[in-house]
Image (cartoon, rainbow, N blue to C red; front, top):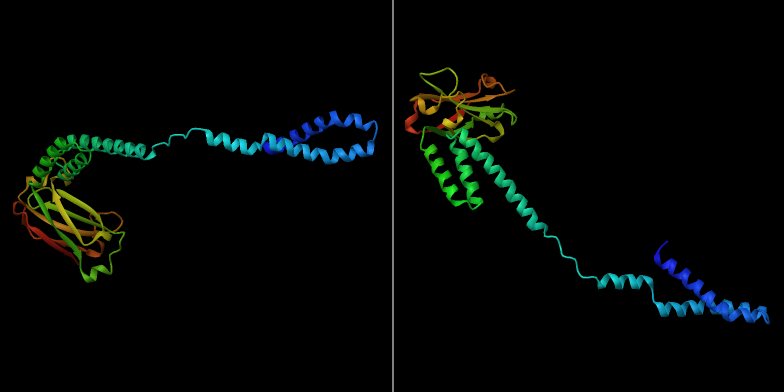
Length: 247
């Protein structure tokens, strides 16, 4: 039962009790008149008590309004602290991976930017130096696009493999990049970090052939309807920019 209902019941009971002390002597002399007086007096007494005691709901509101304001929780600061902690954890994971694979120039650059974001300036500078040293190593870069005929055959879910093979070396590719066909045309970079065989890196060989191949179903050894493009023999040291068109 709500507070206001209990209040009214209590008010009426008190009014009846209070009036009883006055009405009981009268019942003995004039029963009918006394009953009429009770019917009129009870509501009047209840109203009087209401005015004297006030509304319980009003008292409740007054009590609440008198309470001191509660301090607001600083959720924005808490969220920011959590985000910084998550970034720091990921950065430490990347740094640990680079200790095992220090030739990954792209990851060194990512680590440098992350350190800078965390205001770890000295560590950022060191990572930038390592990224620059890897970029100065052996690399082959260029662009791959589809011919107008190939556009009608290739689907966005197909895969593009861009790889380099040594002219005088193992049959397996020495650097491989895999991208979705939906990203075409693609700017690419091949370097030592994309080696697929331990110890067999792009920088070890002087001459390579670069191939861009469209595949379907994940089989990198089979070109979709013969859709591929190959460079001629190129010298790795030349740092040439290649333009390959898949036909």
